[in-house]
Image 1 (cartoon, rainbow, N blue to C red):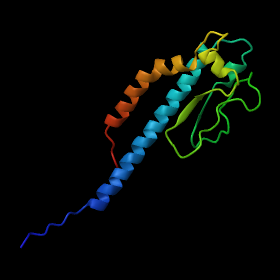
Image 2 (image 1 turned 90 degrees about the vertical axis):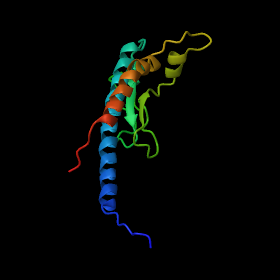
Image 3 (image 1 turned 60 degrees about the horizontal axis):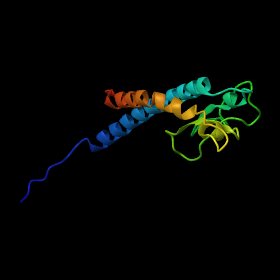
Image 4 (image 1 turned 180 degrees about the vertical axis):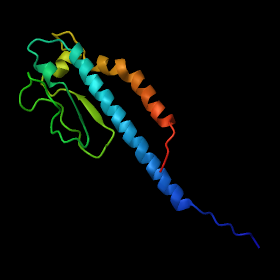
Length: 144
């Protein structure tokens, strides 16, 4: 007859894994938000300025924020800024502008040379962001 073994502590282990996940997700959310605002700031420093409207409209928004549109600067018009992403993707942060000519500035046209500001801002911080997220994942978590 086979020996029967009892495993104890499974519900507690599952509860601790849920707590661990919540702690890690919250830390990642905070780091991504910080990095998104840094990308926004750097993009505003890099963008070519004529009237200042595009620069003022560069904003950050995220799923679950209270903002319909991202925060905007003094030169922005009503409704400028990045719209809040739809859905439940809680780790989604968006930096950009909804000014109609923003893509032309970033990517250029047949008649206009590109003067990128968003992609260079993002890529200049990408490595730092990856390192920060890796650090979060390696950090010990003390649960209650």
